[in-house]
Length: 633
Image (cartoon, rainbow, N blue to C red):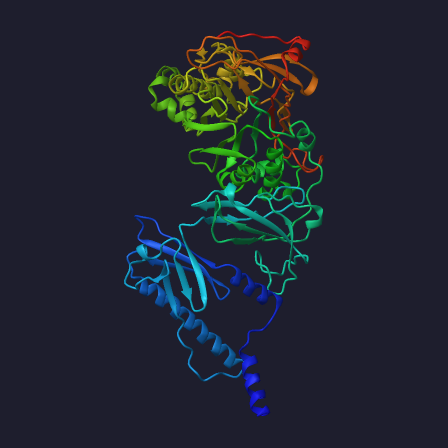
């Protein structure tokens, strides 16, 4: 009797799964809550998808919407049978004892409101939200069109002290509602391990954060990071996703040049103050040329010119300015989509992008979504507008007097990005933000003059059509010093025919004319700093943020960095009243070309123009500063 009992007990224990804390906790979780099966089914699409976890692996099925339910259920059952057959063969090959009895097919059914759904019902109708999929003893709650990550990626390069912003796109959900948990690997990562995957024999992970953005510390150096994120739409959630970094966190460059400036921009400004930044971030296609490596930045270490490294610095710098409007030039399309957009979105900014024709880089404008709403975009390629838009016919006729100059201008892919924003705190109040990057050649002053003439006429036209009276903020890399014709056209609204820039490229491309601006004289909000571009062989001011003096006027300027403005916030519409709003603007204008001081000062070099405004607490402060300006509507 005892022998029979011992034999039965041995056979019984052989059929028990191996016990471990992990399997026990997994079983406990299954008892506490039902697993989820996520179904994506949209009208008009021929296919639907079914995703769920089965026996430790993720299953993703693509089926026809007009297919009978029974075929899907049979496919699930057959898949389980095949896996069991493979497992038995594997055990046999390892010499383990096999059981002769044939495995019974796994029962797979779908229930809705407690009743089994007939197998003849088509998939599109069968898979309803709240139905229950039963696979053997496991039950799944069906979530139809639940929040789902369509894109979920971690950056490749991770530096201590620099924000890690995952690239996330959610269908049927909102990134702002998602839940995030960050982990650090308990053992240092070795390069021999498979990238992006946690080892089955790993020593586990320690939770280190629960926000969308994680800033690694020095304690994270040499360790990989893992992000567990759950897509959500309000309280409704979808299947969680785990992301493991490709490599370990590396040491950062230490203190950067922009850290001191961040001390002045530690907080987002209060309404109605606006902080604006213009920044040429150096496109990767230009950073990797022989000219860049041997002439422009020969002092820069090769690793500091690599895109992955530079992106970390750029994202941290931009995030630390707590801007309301950011205008960027030389933005690689991939950098905008994969890096800047997810990073700045995490800090409350939305963006729009204008790529150059036949190029992989362009212009990007970001705006704080808690302050502004995007109304419309009116971007153009300047050469195309000149040749095809009737409003530029007079200018085209004058340029056509010199065929060589005309051809050079029409070959340029220079673009103008025009974005209209509405003030969310005062609906109806609009602002026009323009962003451009003019022709680069040192002897191309005549080309830049024509480009700016086209830009100003286009801006005048769209402002009158879209938002009459809206103030203009014009940012960019104008590649023009303060004595250039472009600066004179912007600041004085006219360039005479005798200006030297008309013959800047030699007599064969000379084309003298009087060029008038359709927009009243603008003011350089940053003044005239000694340089915004600093490379070997040239230091000068090329970058600007221009504003309209009837809306913003400099009241007082102090040495290196503090400037005070008085803003006239006019009421748009038929309101006749006197409005006074006084602002105190802390303004920094330090624009260096990217990574100039990479070796000399913390391996980093910037190309930056910052215009920052902070509201004055009271009228008395403005009076004490001898700054008083009034405007009438």
